[in-house]
Image 1 (tube, rainbow, N blue to C red):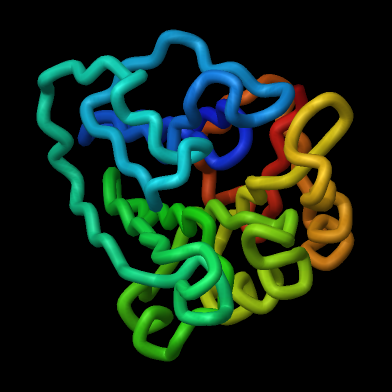
Image 2: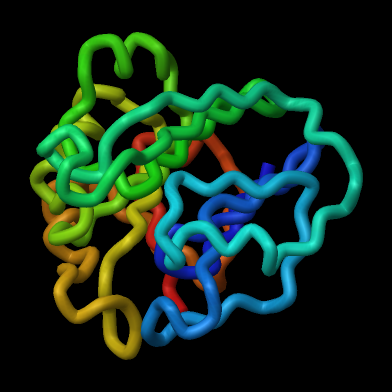
Amino acid sequence: MTITFYGHACFKLDSLCGSILFDPFAPGKVPGWKLPALEADKVLCSHGHSDHNWAEGVALTGRPFTGEIVRIPSFHDDKRGLLRGKNTITLVEAEGLRVVHMGDIGCALTAEQIAALGRVDVLMIPVGGHYTVDAAQAWEIVRSLDPAIVMPMHYSGKGFGYSVIASVEPFLRLAGNVKDVEGMSYTVDLADAPATIVFRR
């Protein structure tokens, strides 16, 4: 299985079961990031905001995705959605690996959500705060799920991201075991675990 990061919260999962694109963003909606022409077997969006739901911009292959997909309702804020609405957590199982994309999670997980997710091999989680959980809150979620590999997302950096959200560095200081990936793709290898994967532009 290979996971490619396209910026913000957009990832593509390529596996023997097919391909999934998570949270593509509309043109001009995320400073410093621009999506190339993309295709996938399936597109999954965590919520309706334009920096996460540009499904119409992705070409579908017409092939089925044969892995398992579980969608778990959650909230975009800590007020049960009153501020920013609902969010969907996605669990994908393919090639024996369990990959979780948290979307724009804005609150702690419930015991029921943790139980529903079960074993997590790869966790994609926002860490920038303001619109989502911040570094400390994200780390608490990581501790509750104990994933083998963590991929932080939805943060700012030099020349990219929203100015109101933090960089990835506060989260990396909490997480440790950082593995920098040159380029934007990582072939999942549980021998790296525990690891925090950071894609360097």
